[in-house]
Length: 344
Image 1 (cartoon, one colour):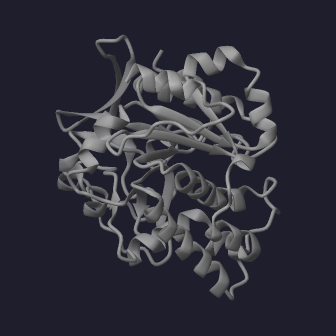
Image 2: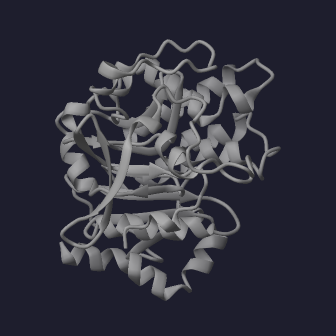
Image 3: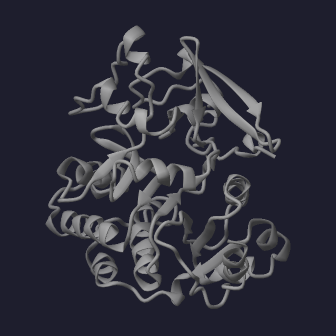
């Protein structure tokens, strides 16, 4: 195991590493001119709970060049850098580049890149035959060992697993991908949606949150499972929140899916992180802790949150609800203020 970690560190220019079908890998994707400050912290946080997993950052040549000079950060995180020009675009990625209808009108192409990240992941997983990838967005703090999560997932088993806060809305802050073929089916579905689209609001209708939710509904021959967002006891005491979200027939039981398989873990699509620290201040300057996500079907104010140090001195978040304790696997901080939620 130690040899695998050492080999991974020396993959900065040649990232062909040794992979096991049973090992869990972590991948971040950030395509842009510079890596935001919060991403440094979420990558460090992922390493805190995953000392043995390989962690990859798929990124632009510009960020790759900048990070290659940050020896202290690379040694501390044992991070493997992969720049996009090292990857051969798959057929699916080439189709996306030609047919996608997501323009650059919002924050230098935010919505296009949010979807295109899955095609970069496909390029990477295909070229290196990487399996069992846990992909995290750059504002997601991880408080669990992905090898333990993989053991739970293998009891399902499934090809994809993600956090859906309603049947119509997936917030893909954490996505498990079994192998390249599973991801290829998703990417093929996304391409078809873009090719067939005749509407006038592609940034709304074709963004990653909508297309992943639609793919989950249709399944397409894959096992697309859910990370549980809610404990079953909640629905015994509280009703579902009435939300202003069209065509939504999601029950609270949908959010409980697979709860019994994940060893008392609760996952966060966005509602918990937003409740703890509010929305992105660029969108809502007055936002603060206590905010309720407008698409959340449950109210986090009914939970008692607390932090406890584990045997290694790492701060771990928990929920106390109805005299029962649940460990939080991840927190999705829309605010990007992740510093005060670090475990070390």
